Length: 349
Ligand code: P6P
Image (cartoon, rainbow, N blue to C red):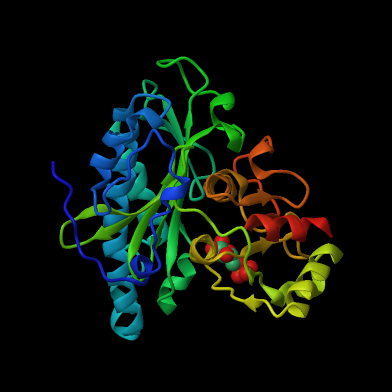
């Protein structure tokens, strides 16, 4: 299938420059606008396992994201109109969007057949999908969903692991509690001014923009690299009184150096902005959340993998996020992620 060039005018494209310098010699420049499936087929040597399996997994995730994207826009409209929507979109008829998104992603992955188990923020325990599946998916189906009511961008975050135990046998804990360094792919969907799918398989970060009129994701950036330096810091200073001293000192450093404070309160949106412009996002331990608020398995690991693949860093303040051995599905960790120089500076205090 020929790649379709779809002229998309969005802030994402105008600031995009193909970073050919960082492209490995073995790879040809992918034509901007190539469809997701074709892109995966063109780069099948980059996925450690059968590319058809990755295609299927990303297709399952992309499919669910298209449905969620449509629901988000609709829900946003109803909420803005206040009372009109209050009877229709609450109670039994329509579920909360978090739950709806969870159902969509679970169903799509179950149908796709490649996943044997699903870890989700919405489920207390993991979900058995198919003992013949080879992959374990960890997902935050809709992060920051409280922002929908005020029409702020929100996101889906996902990690893909290869199961450790033999295909066809029951899932075990060693399949589920894997370190972030074991991820074979990870990424996020940002439901923003344009809806974007950003993922990595360990060979750089690729960004796709969704074209609703065609129902397809098209490549809008190949090999996205995060600026090593930046002057944007994202942290909820409302909790500043209970920040650890090192975090207080770093925030003061940012102020003394006239950095810009940007905190959307939606992790994927803050993270994606920093990916493009350079910056650091910190959710430290606070009085309310002594281990930080963000979850290792389905928020921090995926974004840490993407950040590192884009030349950035991600730690819990002491340890590389991807080296942390999970002990429970929903464990929280302090999270420092972003431009290399900024994270190094922040943890040097
Ligand atoms: P706070 C949303 O609930 C979320 O998980 C992230 O998307 C966001 O960055 C963070 O929590 C905001 O938390 O405590 O600053 O409101």
